[in-house]
Image (cartoon, rainbow, N blue to C red):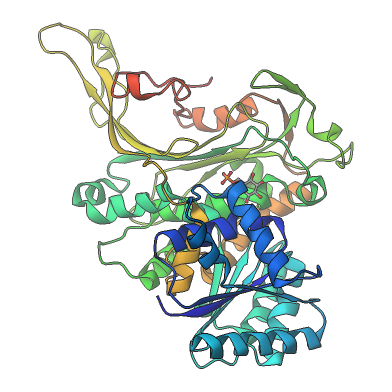
Length: 508
Ligand code: BG6
C-alpha cells in the first residue's frame, strides 16, 4: 500500500471511536498499513496530540476485536496520530491543516496521497468538500480520495444536489461511499462463491431459482435516534441503501476476473432492470408497518409512538416488506422479497435463495412433499452459508429429510466491515462501495414509495414488538405460494448439533 495521510473529520466522534480507530489498528497489527502512515484527526474540541492519542488508545481497549499486549506496538501505532482543531466553516482552519499535513509529509518523506474521511453529519459534506478544494488541500501530487457515509441525500433531488456539490471537488472514482453492509464478510463471500464456482453460476437464474428473500430484522428499537429516525423510517434508513445493495449483490453475475468497474456496471444494470412501481400501486407490492408495545426477548417494550422524541401521531414506518421484480433475461419471473424492521423477534440478516421444484408431486399417490433446496447466507449474527438438500436413508423406507451442508462457517476473528472497507479505499478499490449511478437509480426507484407513504396511500400496519412484523408481510409471499424462511434452531445452533438434520419452519 502506498504511504498516505488519513485526514479524519469528526475525530472525536462516536463512529471514529467505535469503528474507525479499531479498524485501523487491526489493519496495523496485520501489517496492512504502510510503514510511513500519518493520520490527522480533526474536531472542534481543544485536544492536543497527546490527549488525542490517549483517547484513541482508550477506544482500542474498549472497541477493538483484538488488542495486543505489545505496548511498544500500540505506541508505534499511536505515534502516527496528530490532532488539529477545525471548525468546518472556518477557512483559516483548513490552511492550518494544510500546513500540518505538508509538514508531516515532509517529515515522513511521503508523497501527497490524501484520504479525506468525513465522519460527520451529512449536512457538512458539501462545505468540507468545497473547503478541501478551495484551500488547496485537494491539490496533490499523488492521489486524493473521499470517504463518506450514508445518508446520501433524503430523496432523489437532494441526493443529486449533494452529488453535484461533491463532484466539484472530487471525481466519481475518487469518492468512496460506505454502505457498511457491503463490507460484511458474508456479503463479500456471496460474490466470491459465485465467482469461483461454475456450478453456482449455472444455477444463478430464473431457470432454477424460484424466489430470493432478503431479510434484515432487528430487535432494537429507535434507541437514542428518535429525531433522525422519525424523519427517515425503515425505507430510507435501511431499504433504499443496505437492502437494495444486497439485492444488487445477489442479482449480479460475476465471472471470476471481474474488476470493480465491472461490478459497478453490473449493479447499475440490475437497478435499471428493476420494474418501477407506480405511486398508486405501491400498496400492492409494499407493506408498511409500525411497532406497538410488546415483548422482545422476554422484556416488555413500549410502542414506537410512545418512544421519547417520537410524535404521538407519527405515521413513520419501522417496518417495510416489498416484492421486487427484475426485468432481465436472467431474473424475469423471480420475485425478490425484501423485509426489514425494528423491534422484531430477533436480530437476523440473511439472504435465502429458494430453488425451483421442477418435478410435480403426485398428491393422489400420497407422496410426501419434499422441502425445496435452499442456499442460505446468514450475515448476522451468525456468519455461515448453508445449502439445504434432501436426503433419505436407503433401506429405511423413510421420507426425504432436509440436510444442511455448511459451505462456510464463520471464522474466528474475521475482520470487521470497516476493516475491509477502509483497506479497500486505501487501495483505491471501489468494488464494495456504493457508486453514484446505482445510488441515483435506487433513489429513483424508491421515490414512488416515499411519496405513497407521505400521502398515506399505503396502510400503516401495526405489529406487536417481538413478532416478525405485520401478518400482511407473510401474505405478500403467500399470494405467490411462498413463505418467509427462517431457522428456528438458529439460536440453539452450536458445535454439538452442527451438521445435524433440522427442519426449517415458517413463521406463519
Ligand atoms: C444502520 C441503520 O445503517 O444500520 C441502523 O442506520 C441499523 O438503524 C444498522 O440499526 C444495522 O446495521 P447492522 O450492521 O447492525 O445490521
